Image (cartoon, rainbow, N blue to C red; front, side, top):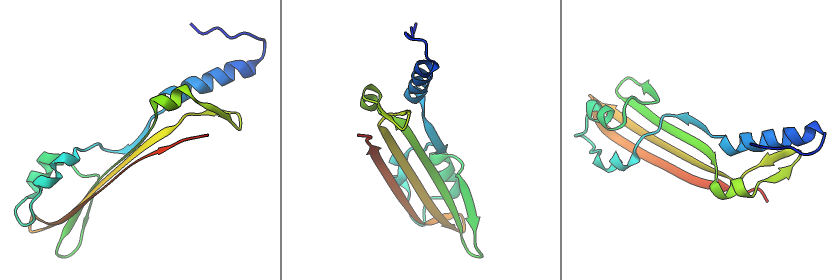
Length: 128
């Protein structure tokens, strides 16, 4: 149970914002396991193989002779350490944030992989 001492509503608002920051998590796209990427073989791996490895792609595009699939995922989460050392900035409590981004692009011709690339990034943002 949280007890707020004092008569001001500002105390209640500060605690409410703090509690919201503790649970805030934002993500876009669909999580996928990039450890399967080394299994992709150009000219051998099929669309069906890719779907069994990663599921349906985030998006698909086609040209006259090829097709490209894109798998994307990004997330932002307050870090455990950031939750214990939040700071007051312009009236808002701001925890440290860890962000993760993954993007897998796969090109096909005649249902076979002809090219692919994986980009990953993991960063932390600290508010001092």
